[in-house]
Image 1 (tube, rainbow, N blue to C red):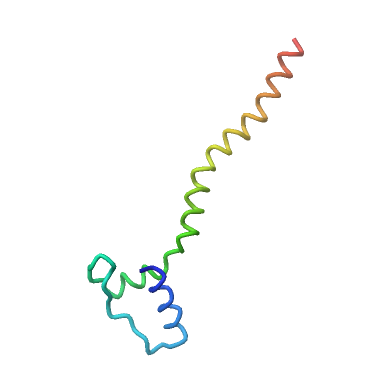
Image 2 (cartoon, rainbow, N blue to C red):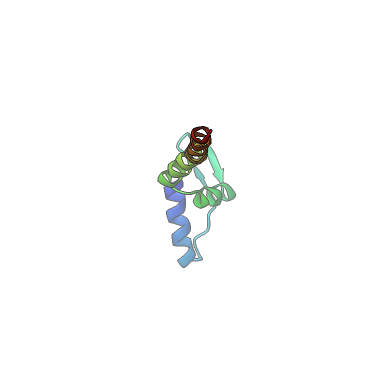
Amino acid sequence: EVTAAQTLAEFAKTNPTLEFKGAISSDGRWLQSDEIKMLATLPNKETLIGTVITMLYSPIRSVISSTQGTLPAIMSALSNK
C-alpha cells in the first residue's frame, strides 16, 4: 500500500491532473484521499527497520561508552592507593 501510494504521489508531482480520490486497502477498507497522501509520506520498510534498530541500540551504546571511561578511572584510582 505504501509503495503504491508513494509511486502515485511521485507521478502526481509531474502530472498535476492526477488527483487522489480514494483507494481500497489490502484488508478491504476504503481509504480517503488524505489517508493515501499520508501513506505516501511514510518512509519505506528498510528505513523504518533501521530507525527502530538505531533507537534500540542507542541506550546500549551509551551504557557501554560510559562504562569504558569510568572503569579505567576507577581501576587507576584503586591502584594508586
